[in-house]
Amino acid sequence: MVRNIPAGCVATYGQIAAIAGYPRHARHVGRALADYDGEDELPWHRVLNAQGRISSRPDWECEEVQRQLLEAEGVEFSTDGRVDLERYRW
Image: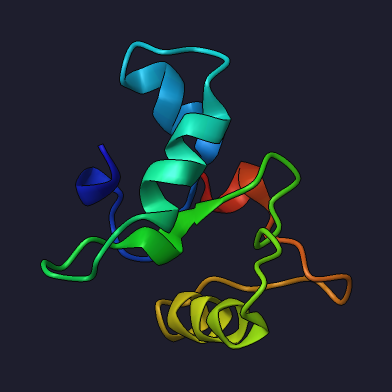
């Protein structure tokens, strides 16, 4: 499902779980993306939490990379670090 998110759009972990047939399993999506090995071109950066924020990670540099990738696709962040899900949600 993550592969289908178009550039310039985002989805939430819960949204991906629901589309995959596992509503209320957002954490499973998060774990699957955390285990992503980077071998193919999965647009992991287009998945955000339910508040439209980049989820915290132990490696803060990854969060900055995610934001840069989204901004390069035209996704805008508010001053408090949120993406307007009504505007950018896939």
